[in-house]
Amino acid sequence: MSKQILGGIKILDLTRVLAGPWCTQALADMGATVYKIERLGAGDEMRHSPPFLKDADGAPTRDSTSYVCVNRGKRSLAIDFTRPEGRKLLLGLVERCDVLAENFKVGDLKRYGLDYESVRKVNPSIVYCSITGYGQDGPMASQPGYDPVFQAISGIMSTCGLPDGMPGSGPMRSMLPLVDVMTGMVSTSAILGALLHRKGTGEGQHLDIALLDVALAATVHLGQTYLSTGKLPQRAGNGSLLFAPSNCYPCVEGHILIQIGNDFQWTRLCKCLGKEDWLEDPRFVTNASRMTLSRELDLLLSEITRTWDKQTLSELLGKSGVPCGPVNNLAQAFEHPQVKHRELKMELEHPVYGKLAQIRSPLRFSETPAQYRIPPALGADTADVLREELGLSEEMFGQLQEAGLV
Image (cartoon, rainbow, N blue to C red):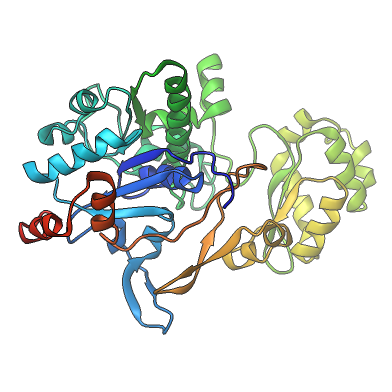
């Protein structure tokens, strides 16, 4: 077996939905053993969010695409930890784990003696990662929130959409849960940093990761420009607030995205399109002048691009050093030559689904490659893990089942 960068690290995963599971899946891909604790009988909420997968014979199953996309490589335990006996099982696992990740509302786990202060008494060196909407403190800490809420609150939505005055203008959210995914990435980084700190000091700690914090951090140059100048960024649709030309341009079939980032790229674009005269046009000589006339320039470019096939034009401009790409749907994206070369679509052999297509992890290590294992069925590993970690006999496990704890 290949070396595993997190081999020997055990994660107690009390996360659900998307941000937390993205994080723990990344840790599982890096070789950590992840014990996913799920609600007895129901499991992670994302198991119930359609569409649902079909088995190898085409019959529908109870597992959703939303669940399998962020839960591969884990071991599922269905335990009722709202009861003292179930809590005792979890604390037994806490003693043997390096990390506990959770995304319950602030204060919820304290009711069951599973908050950081309680858990650290059992395992002082544990890294305890709390993922919430608003953080562990403040006037809104106890409130729930999902990805679109934080796209709205953070100002991200105010920067997306068509400019004022255009048909259909107004704030626009991303249909992709970008704040959730970024929060999963930040949580992964925080856990790895805390494990490194623990390796040198023996100290565990509490990580307070908030979707709101991540969303504001994601505003990067737009947020910094406001803080430095007091000027609010204006919506630019598919355009840019920094460079011109930059937009989606029509082609014979579909669109192409062209993003010019400097005058050298502008020169290459003009030469590729046979518009060398634009290089002498005083309106377009500098990026600053092009920015003031960006809409006019977009119209001129559109008249040229609409005669081209988007893939042909993309290949021509790309080989000339012009940043661009065809605007693909997902079917076209997975057929993109670089996507296929990078094998970003992969397949796992699954006993129920047959070949389960998945998106490959963006984490690439030369010496410790990611380890890909199938997503677990609800509670599939409860008996094995409790036997391996806590030494429970078959008889004891049977008694837990009769009591409705597992």
